[in-house]
Image (tube, rainbow, N blue to C red; front, top):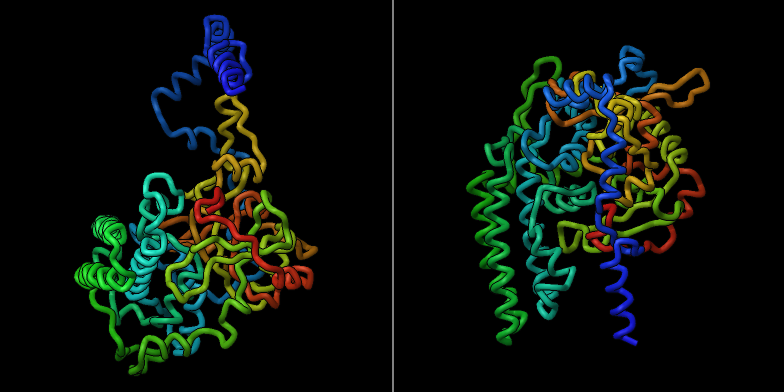
Length: 461
C-alpha cells in the first residue's frame, strides 16, 4: 500500500497534467505572454512605471480628494501628540495616551506625558524573566522541531505587545511622568539594545537547556536564571537609566503655579487611573471574521509577566463594536485601538479609506479579497495601535468617519491625527479596549464563556 501511495504521489508531482504540481511549459508560457498586449495605453503605462516606482501616487483616487474633512461631531478631550520614534511600542504609547487627559485634568495641566522609558524598562525586564521561565518549562522538548521552543528562541524579547502587557507592568511597577525618567537614545531607537539582549537571552536559554540535560535541578536552573537577569538589568540600566522607586515631580499648572509631588510610581499610577480600571471592566474586543462571534478567545502565553493577565478578547461583529465605541466617545472616554494602518492610508492627508488607491485599475489586475480572506492569507492583520478619540455621524447619528490619535509625532498625518472612514473601519480595524458597560447585553453574556485557547503563533497574532 505504501509503495502504491508513493507511486501515485510521484505521478502527480512529475506529470505536467497532475493535480498537485504543474510546470510551466511552452504552451502555458505562450498563453501567459500573449495576454500582455503592447498597445499604446500599455506602452505609456510601462514607460511611466519603469521611470518612477511610486505606484501609490499614480493609483491615488482623485475623485475622493477633498471630500473627507477632519471635523467631528463627537470628540474626547484629548490634547497633544506623542512620538514613539524608532520603537515598536505603539501599544504602550496608546495605553498611556488614553490616560493622559485624566492626568491633565487632575493636576490642572496644559500638557502632560508619561515616561515611556520607565514602563519600557520593566516591560523588557519582565519579558526576559518570562522567556527564561518558559525555557525552563520546556527543557524536555526538541529545540529543532517543537513549535513552542522554536517560537521562544525566535524572539526572546521585543518591543511588541498589547494592552494587557501595559496593564501588567503598570499594576506591578506603576508609572511616572516623563521628566522623572526622560527618553534616551535607546528608548527612542530600540533595535540595537534589543538585539544585544536577545543574543544574551538566547545564550542563557541554551545554557539552561544544557544544564537540564546534565541533570541539574530546577533550583540550579533558577540560580542561573538570576545570573542572566542581572545582565539584562545591567544592559537596561546602562541604556535607559535606572528606574526610581520613589520620585519628586515638579509641575506647573495652567494658571502658572509651581507645585511639587513626592510619591512612588505605584501610588501615582493608582491616583490617575479610573477606579474600575481592571480586566474585569475594561475588555479587549476584536473583529475577526475568521472565527465565531460572541465568543471569547485567549492567546496562549501572550503576556509579559508571570503573574500578569494573558491576552483575552471577545470577538464581535463590527456593528456591535461601533455602537460601543460611539457610546464611549460620547461619554468622553478615548479607547485603545489597533488596526492595519498601512492599508489605503494617504499619509500626507491623514486620511484612510478603502478606495484611496486604485492599484488594480492602474495595473489592470484583480486583487480583491474580503477581510476574512485577507486575514487567512496574511495579507492583512493588526500592525499598529492608536487611541480612538472621535466620531462623526450623519443626520441619523450613524457613523461616517472616525479619528485616531497617533504616536508618530505632530508632523505625521493631520497634525498627528488620522481620519478614517466608516468603510475603512469595517475592513482594517481589528481590536480595541473598552469599558464593558458600553457593550450590549448579548456581548456581556458572552464574556462569561470559557475562552477558546489559541497558540501564540496563530495567524492572527
